[in-house]
Length: 423
Image (cartoon, rainbow, N blue to C red; front, side, top):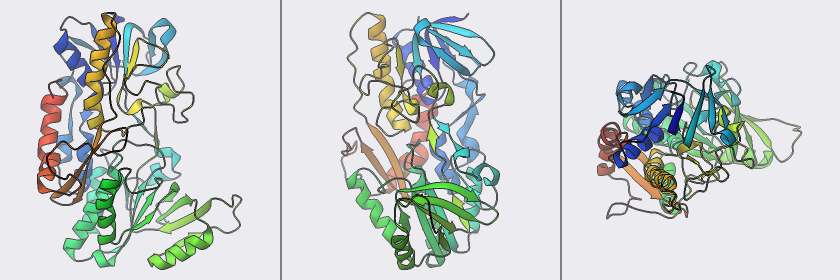
């Protein structure tokens, strides 16, 4: 069969949640799910894996075990969309037609946009929790660190789980503090963002942690290259060379360099030597979306163009999108998907019934940020970047109960309830 009433592109959190919820509302829907992967990953736990607090094996399951019954799994990858014909083409040449399309293939990790990263990742003391294969290596680096320069990077692009680049940094610093070597650690956070966190109430808590751990922050810094053999990271900064020299001197930073006689006076090129480096790649929409008619022409990263409240495509009304691939200005998290999925389901069913789409997503997202082992701040907020707290206490204060939520409750909910459409 090459025609489906509803075709879902992506069998991750978003795709499986939407499929399950649709079938709970109407078990007679004909749904196809296009997903090439044999494995399904619970990626939010990879930070904990990198900190030695979670078993990597428990984050990997068979995709087949979570494909909802009464759907068809099409084990292929999409190469092109033809929305005017209601058709998608797959890598094997198959064309699939649909009445309604839900696009949620996730986000693309652009490892190669940092020169030298793919060659050195997983060795030369360079790791990343954004890869199943290297998250355990992060823990090896943290555990065996004897002091020196530790660099943690965050790209200038939006990324999935925006807090992950600095979550691992706080856990590493807490581990080194407990080992009694933190005062021998020169810790740098090289971030493309302009602030530590976008919501001021939560940012205050993190600023205190940054000060407590004596972390040197470099905002507006775009990592361009990593040389694993010489243990050097290269980044571009909007700060002027003289200001950078003063800053590095004041920070008592270890070995760094600033390129002289630069072509662009507004951008300073900085090199920083490290002993260990945790890096996060730039991210964007998958290439097959970037080059498709679904992409937002005004978004350089190629995200799907949707109405940020209804999740309906701006130009093709029988298409919806959710999750990390959209241009909605919200954080790209599993918590956002959990609130987007019911909106997509309700609006899709309204559209099928020839009713106006009325369900609305408010931009809700949540970012559980561990500030030390055993304590976590649950940051919740919406499009307005105002706190939107679920619990009847100040969630800007890190708590043991929230650590339990992150390490025990949420993984169980994911596998047993969220993917089944019941949470």
